[in-house]
Length: 300
Image 1: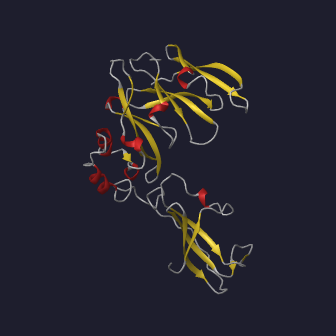
Image 2 (image 1 turned 45 degrees about the vertical axis):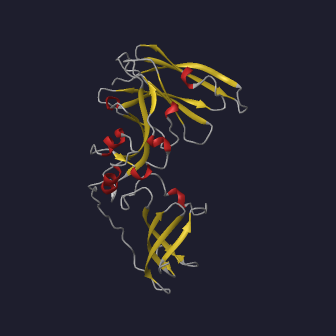
Image 3 (image 1 turned 30 degrees about the horizontal axis):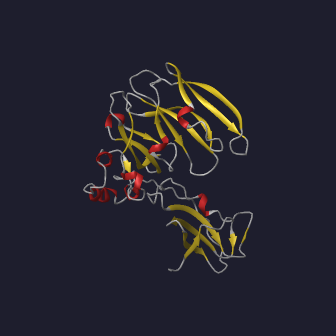
């Protein structure tokens, strides 16, 4: 290991390194796997005065997180062997948006375009000029490469198909967050961004009635954060701009799995639907509340 580099695992709760590692892409590292932050450190036994100056060895540091088991700290010494360190002024760096989402993206995309395992609809989004497909994730999950029959969305007696696609969503000019989308093989139906970044499956979706009577059936999705007792049941509708928008949600307590998700939402009238709210005691299956709640769809 080079001088002035210190490594540490993420598994020390007292220093809470994991707080910095989220799914948001870093504006300097340009990817979710690495994080760069300004930091400050003192040698053991160093004393910081009320004026903020330290006694002992002091460092200005760049903290770089990467490769999920390790954190690497890069230090530049500004005061050593008991010398009084200079005051460090904060620096502001303006980073322009890259011509590609992350360095090397276009090269990897071009190499995958010819991969016969990549579904044609994914190749379409890889080259549409504004979708950030997480290319390095495509072969991590089998569900990403499998188009599955789903249901009839527009009432033409043709079963529409869908798959799960890993996708990056832009937060600002330089920051991205990882997620997943339900992508329909028929491009007329676009893609539906999942509220959850993982644990998405085609089997979590189901076709509903045409609640707003626009010729397209609404979609229900059971979403899960992968952990915890309380999940969610959500309703989405497709707008004329080919964007799926959430129209309402209700908590789904997995301690009360019945009735199934398809029976917990129903059309009441044009542009109105109901969710069945079910609440349970801690003991599995002991229902304490079961009531229908009315929701009105938002204008598209």
